[in-house]
Structure formats: structure tokens, C-alpha cells
Image (cartoon, rainbow, N blue to C red; front, side):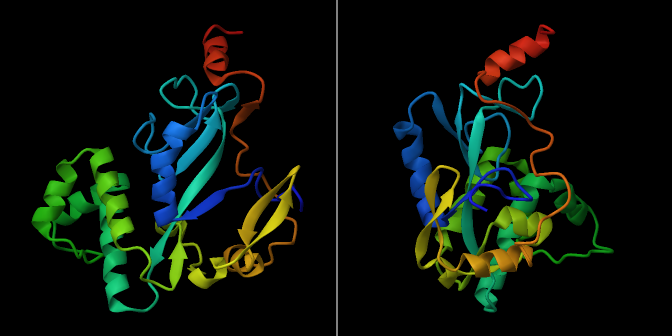
Length: 240
């Protein structure tokens, strides 16, 4: 569509877990204001991804929240291993899901620890480890999650964005589809995309070239490209 995506309003960036971790270490020092880099460890909310944004613009999602960076941004998602049929990868995936659960749905683990009946999920992690996990801070748990993902990356033929797998169960992707890239026009620039983008998009969206009727993914966000988000929030609070 050369810039027009029927079901979205922007591009998203995906990186293999090892590249993602490298970028996360480099970006905070290399990006200069007004650009900024945020992730789960340096912002007011627990992102399951990273963002590069511009503080001299506004993409307001959280009203009154000055502790959250809310400039116009691009999302950066890590691609992690997911099960490809092997017992080892299935066990790794279950551990990933349980640590994730301790961060975003701890009540499920608490219910498991408090009852032994009507369980719909069989845990892999030891009960004592689960108890210790619940005592950890959110950021420490997320750090453990990411380290475990990194330590077990590159051993599966299938990859995906784990946050999407856990929340919406999106179709897994073949690692080989990302072996080669080609440059594709988006607006006024060229961006790298998997050479097998048709297979990726078909796996994710089915008939992705058919127009989608409905709201975009950012309908609830206020965009002001020329007003810094801190100034915009101040003006809202003053009733301007």
C-alpha cells in the first residue's frame, strides 16, 4: 500500500531476540534528544516491547500521566523462539508463559497455590519457585523473563512475538522466512522487510490485501506532531 495500511496507522519493527537485546543496550546512549528510547525498565508503565519516540510531539494514550513517555513513536518487538514440535521447546515455552503469568496475571498463580481442584493448567515450575516469583518486583520478573528468552533463543524453527502469543494466540512464523530481506517503500522512505513477507502476512492476517472495515489500532490516541507531550498534558490540566 506504500504507506496506507487498512488495519493500522504505522509500521512496527520486529527484531530477533539477540538483535533486540543488542539494540536495547546501544539505543539509550546513541539516540539524542528529542528522540528517546523506552522499555519496561525506564518508563512509567510495563511495556512488553521497546519504543523509540520524539519528545517534541504528542501521542497521548494515558491522560495526566507525565511519568509515561508519550511522544509519537515506533514500536519495536522482540521475536522469540516458540515450540516447533520438540519436547524441549514445549517445556521452555511453558516456563516462559508461567513467568509471564506472574507479571501480568499473578492471580492465576495465586489461585493455583491456594487450591488443588478445578485446575485448567498444569504448572511446570516448582511451587516454591512460584512463591518466590510472586514476591519479586515487576521489573525483576520481567528481567528474568527476558533473560530466559535470550538464553533459549535460536533453538527453534518457529518464532513469534511472545506477548501476542500469550494474549491473542497469533500464528507462529517460520524462522527461514526472515533469512533474506528486501527494501519496500513506505511513505517517503525505504524500509527492510522479510523477502517472504507474503508468507508472513498470510500467516498473520489471511487475505491481507482485502480492505478491512473498522477502526484502526490507534483510534484512542491523540496525535499532535508539533506539540511536546509534556506541554500538551499541561494545557489539558489548565483547561486550554
